[in-house]
Amino acid sequence: MATPVFSLAAAAAAALIFACAAYAGDPFAYFDWDVSYITAAPLGVEQQVIAINKQFPGPVVNITTNWNVVVNVLNSLDEPLLITWNGIQQRKNCWQDGVLGTNCPIPSGWNWTYQFQVKDQIGSFFYFPSVGFQRAAGGFGGITVNNRAVIAVPFGKPDGDITLFIGDWYNKNHTDLRKMLDDGKDLGMPDGVLMNGKGPYRYNATLVPDGIQYETINVEPGKTYRFRVHNVGISTSLNFRIQNHNMLLVETEGLYTVQQNYTTLDIHVGQSYSFLVTMNQNASSDYYIVASARFVNESLWTRVTGVAVLHYSNSNGKASGPLPDPPNDFYDKYFSMNQAKSIRMNVSTGAARPNPQGSYKYGSINVTQVYVLKNEPPAVINGTRRTTLNGISYSPPDTPLRLADLYNLKGIYTLDFPSSPLDRPPRIGRSVINGSYKGFVEIILQNNDTTVQSYHMDGYSFFVVGMDYGEWTESNRGTYNKWDAASRCTTQVFPGAWTAILVPLDNVGIWNLRAQNLDSWYLGQEVYMKVADPEGYNKTELTVPDNVLYCGFLKDKQKPQESHRKQSSSPSIATGRSKLLTLMLLFATAFAVVS
Ligand SMILES: *[C@@H]1O[C@H](CO)[C@@H](O)[C@H](O)[C@H]1NC(C)=O
Ligand SMILES: *[C@@H]1O[C@H](CO)[C@@H](O)[C@H](O)[C@H]1NC(C)=O
Ligand SMILES: *[C@@H]1O[C@H](CO)[C@@H](O)[C@H](O)[C@H]1NC(C)=O
Ligand SMILES: *[C@@H]1O[C@H](CO)[C@@H](O)[C@H](O)[C@H]1NC(C)=O
Ligand SMILES: *[C@@H]1O[C@H](CO)[C@@H](O)[C@H](O)[C@H]1NC(C)=O
Ligand SMILES: *[C@@H]1O[C@H](CO)[C@@H](O)[C@H](O)[C@H]1NC(C)=O
Ligand SMILES: *[C@@H]1O[C@H](CO)[C@@H](O)[C@H](O)[C@H]1NC(C)=O
Ligand SMILES: *[C@@H]1O[C@H](CO)[C@@H](O)[C@H](O)[C@H]1NC(C)=O
Ligand SMILES: *[C@@H]1O[C@H](CO)[C@@H](O)[C@H](O)[C@H]1NC(C)=O
Ligand SMILES: *[C@@H]1O[C@H](CO)[C@@H](O)[C@H](O)[C@H]1NC(C)=O
Ligand SMILES: *[C@@H]1O[C@H](CO)[C@@H](O)[C@H](O)[C@H]1NC(C)=O
Ligand SMILES: *[C@@H]1O[C@H](CO)[C@@H](O)[C@H](O)[C@H]1NC(C)=O
Image 1 (cartoon, rainbow, N blue to C red):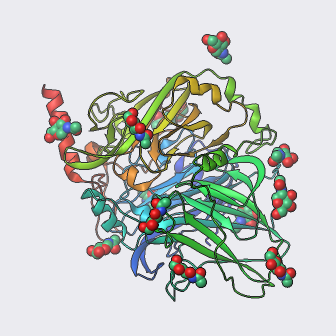
Image 2: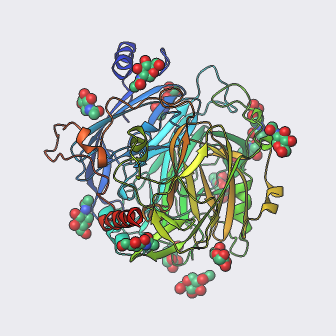
Image 3: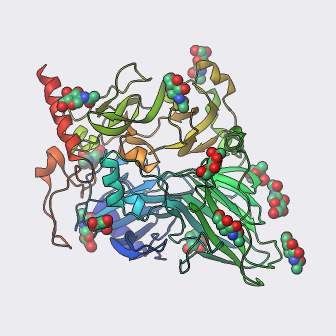
C-alpha cells in the first residue's frame, strides 16, 4: 500500500503553488498515481483491468479530517479518464469532484493533479473512475477519513483495519460492456462477484473452477477488527456475511450508527459500511466471508457469489461445507427494507466534530423545495435504449456545466428540471435542478423499475427519512423518521418503492445526483443540482484551480501537454458515450432555437 509522503516544507510549497484557501497548518498528503491497464484473470478468464500503480484494486487513501489531499493522476489508459471521490464532500469546491458536469476528462497520456481538503467529515468511502463505464474494469480503491486525535470515537480502537471491496464482475471488459449498452442490449447475469479483485474460494468444486486466486483475511484469535466493506460493483445488490461471526455495525458513509449486531447485511451498489468483528470462534477451521447476489433467483445465480477466507492464525484447517445461509425472506419483501430502516444515527456521539451528531435537528427544519424523481425501466428514445429520471435522459454536453457558467456560455444546459414526473414522452436532455443555497430540499426517489437502484449525491450527505413500497404520496410524510435517520451519501430504492431524503443545501457548486448502478447511470439516469452562491464566485465558492482543463466550446483555451504516451489531444467528453446522441442533441437544440 502506498503511504502518503508527508512533509511540512512540501506542504508550504504546495500551499504557495496552488494558492488554495486551505487552512495553514492542515497537513498535506501526496499521491502519485499511474492509472493503466494490467492483465488479470480474476475469474479465470484473462482480461484488461484498470490498476493504479499496477495495483488492482487501487491503494487506500488513508487520511484525516481537514487534511489536504494532492493526487497527481497520470492517465495511461487509451481513453479519457476522471476519478471521482465518492462521498468526499468537496466543500465549496466542485472543481475537484471528477465528474463530467464539473471537469473535462483527462486525455489519454496526460496527467492532472487533484487537490482538495477533506473538511468536516470522517468515515469510509471509495474512489472510482467516473466515465466510460470504466468502474466495471476496476480503478477503484478506498478512502478512509480518520478522526482527528482530539475527537472521541464511540468504540475502542480496533486491533486492525481491513478494507474489502465486493462487487459483481463480468469476464467481458468494459469496452465490450459499453458497446452492448450502446447497442441497446442488456448486460445479463454477471459472471461472478469479486472480493478485493479476486474470485471465489473453491468452496464447491463443481461451481468454482480450479486455480482461481481468492482473498484471505488473516486474523489473530481474540482480537477485534474493523471491516470497511464497499460495494464497488456494477448493478448487483449483495448480501454480506461472515460465517459464525457477528458483525457489529458502527459506521456508514461517515455516520456513526447505533451499534447493532448483524449476521448478514444487504449492501447495495455504491454503499459503504464499517463493522467491528471479534475473532471469538474456536478456529476449528477457517471461516467463509460471503457476498451473494440478492433479490434474484439464487438457484440460477449461484455463480454470482463472492467467497473469501477468514483465517485465524491458530486455525486447524480449511473452510469446508456449505456457505452460511443468506436471509430466507422470499415471501417477505419488507425484510431488507426493515433492515435498512434499522440503520440509525447514534445521536449522542460526535463524528468529525465533538458536538453530537443529533444536535443538528433536521426533523424540525422547514422544507423549501420538493422534488419527486421517478425512474422508469429502460425505454427506446429516438432509436437508442435509455434510462430516465422524470422522463429525461441526461446526456453530458462537451463543455462541463460549471465551466460553462464560469465563462458565461449560454445554451449548454437548461435550469428547468421538472419537480415531478410530467405526462409526456421521455426525451434526451441536459436539464439541471435549480437548488436554492441554504434551502432544505426533500427528494423522493421513486423506483418504477423492477430491480433495486441506489442513488448518490455528490457534495452532500442526506438524511434517509423514509422508504416504503407503492407510489409516494404526501401522507407518507407522517411516517418519516425525524429523529435519528441515517445521514449518508448513497441510498437504495427498492423496486416499486420510494425512498425520501432530506438535504440541507449548504454547499455551493454544481453537484451530480446519479444512479450508482453503472448501467442505469451510463444510459442517462443522472441529473445535476446547481446550488449557486448568491454572493457570487470567489466569495463562498473556491476559485477555479490553476491547472483546470478546458474542452468543448472552451477547448481553444487549453495549452497542449506533452503526452507521456505520445497520444495527446484536447480533452473531449464525447468519447465513451454514443457520439450519435451528441449529434442528435445538437440537431434538437438547433431546431428548438430556429422554431
Ligand atoms: C475488450 O475486448 C475486446 C475483444 O472482446 C477487444 O477488442 C478490446 O480491445 C478490449 N478492450 C480493452 C480495453 O481491453
Ligand atoms: C491510517 O492512518 C491512521 C492515522 O494516521 C493510522 O493510525 C493507521 O495505521 C493507518 N492505517 C493504515 C491501514 O495504513
Ligand atoms: C503533471 O505532473 C507533473 C509532475 O509529474 C506536475 O509537475 C504537473 O503539474 C502535472 N500537471 C497537471 C496538469 O497536473
Ligand atoms: C456444489 O454445487 C452443486 C450445484 O449447485 C450442488 O449440486 C452440489 O451439491 C454442491 N456440492 C457440495 C459439496 O455442496
Ligand atoms: C454483538 O455480538 C458480540 C458477540 O459477537 C457481543 O459480545 C456483543 O455484546 C454484541 N453487541 C451488541 C450491541 O449486541
Ligand atoms: C468449534 O465450534 C463449532 C461451531 O461453533 C463446533 O461445531 C465445534 O464442535 C467446536 N469445536 C471445538 C473443538 O470446540
Ligand atoms: C428459479 O429458477 C429455477 C430454474 O430455472 C426454477 O425452477 C425456479 O422455479 C425459479 N424460482 C423462482 C422462485 O422463480
Ligand atoms: C453512542 O455513542 C456513545 C458515545 O457518545 C456510546 O457511548 C454509545 O455506546 C453509543 N450508543 C450506541 C447504541 O451505539
Ligand atoms: C416552519 O413553518 C411553520 C409554518 O409555516 C412556521 O410556523 C415555522 O415558524 C417555521 N419554522 C421555521 C424554523 O422556520
Ligand atoms: C429526436 O431527435 C430529433 C432530431 O433528430 C429531435 O427533434 C427530437 O426532439 C428528438 N426526440 C427526443 C424524444 O429526444
Ligand atoms: C410504474 O408506474 C406505473 C404507472 O404509474 C404503475 O402502474 C406501475 O405499477 C409502476 N411499477 C412499479 C414497479 O413501480
Ligand atoms: C478571489 O478573491 C481574492 C480576495 O478577495 C482575490 O485576492 C483573488 O484574486 C480572487 N481570485 C480570483 C480568481 O478572482
